[in-house]
Image 1 (tube, rainbow, N blue to C red):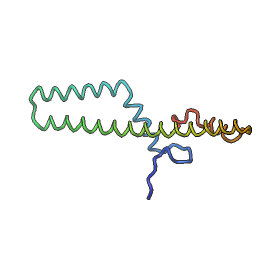
Image 2 (cartoon, one colour; image 1 turned 180 degrees about the vertical axis):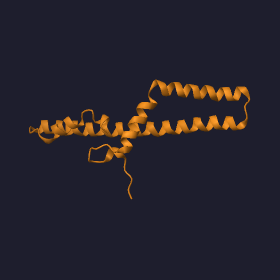
Image 3 (cartoon, rainbow, N blue to C red; image 1 turned 30 degrees about the vertical axis):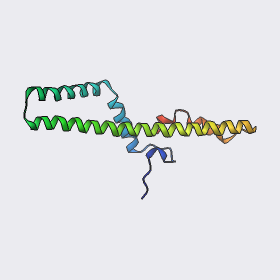
Image 4 (cartoon, rainbow, N blue to C red; image 1 turned 180 degrees about the horizontal axis):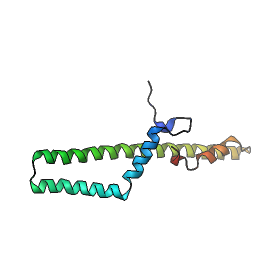
Length: 122
């Protein structure tokens, strides 16, 4: 079985994973999530400053680790989608320029139109 990134599918449809990743990306870039992260860091310092038991320290530390891993995965997903969209746009621009240079515009111009704002569809 070969694994491929969701952005590399040729059908142009967004699956459940893409919709979930987009919603999670929107949530994690919101002010509410920023406040949550600040509160989590404050809780980390408060637990250590208060000298609470090791269980509380481990709980807060593990929560911070889980949030960090989630953010890393979301960041990588967004990076790959943007990278793929940018490459498709560059390919479409190059093909359109080549067609224009050769004097017979055609399919590349349509591909260029499709490539505009592609990162929002991936």
